[in-house]
View 1: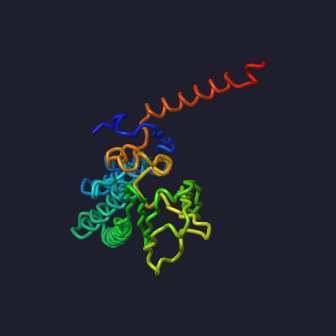
View 2: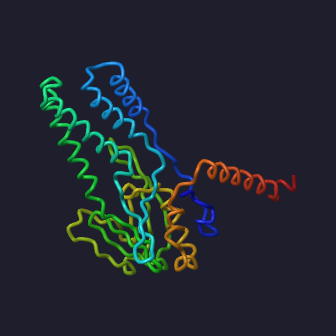
Length: 281
């Protein structure tokens, strides 16, 4: 269903953020495997190259659709790995491994396809299952609290007690960086049901609760803007619908981005024209 402007509550300003992350290595490698499937190799082995090619192409990362469900009339953001490029990649890679193993066992391909297929299949199944372990993560946009649950952490932060919504960039060695959302809220106001076995706390003594955006199937800037809007507009929390929350978490389209960018430039121009310095000049 096409999102309408009215799906968002009045006053919400969508965050632009980063629409997609693009690495040319994956699609180029995928195109190379697909080319091999079309122009080279035995006929029975082409399915393997097609599957592997599609797996590589699937790593092209487009704007992620938020996985929002409705529980007791409130919007709940969940993690759905099969909607992410990495999830699609490992699912297709599992198919490629099983295909390789089958060709090796039936004799339609060289015998080394058997160990290669076993390694590829078990490795991709392992990482697929690893991704699925986070399927119970959720953020519930309640009327009175923001409930965050993931990886052994379980917090309920009262909207009225959240004093600031910030972001920071976390850098991971060999894995690039990703955004984290930092919610400032007094520890005494938070209902903390976190497991005592959790390896590390995601807060500091100042009451800053860190939410890694990689834990959800959502664009980081959209999640941050949605939380900030609900913190700043208490009158919207009781009446906001799950459909509106879903629209807020959905990244702006290309047309919306162009309109927002143009409006920002017009506002800056008008501000410069109306400034005292320009009038005195």
